[in-house]
Image (tube, rainbow, N blue to C red):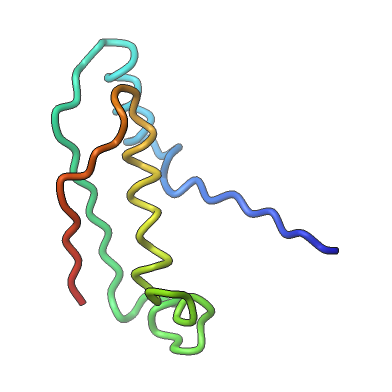
Length: 90
């Protein structure tokens, strides 16, 4: 059996994210609210290709992309993640 391993850091190690995590952990800054926005236009390579694999997933493009902002939110220490709402539009 072949197994494919992929790692999707999804901006977890970007300069901005690393600085934010540093502020929270090293300087003890509290996080009261976080908002993550991800915008993919119709010109996006995966979005523009109607035969791309992610269109076949439950939820299509939204189903594939939904986990990515959650990864960013879960990176911050503290209480369990409790989303207040999810807004999505096509």
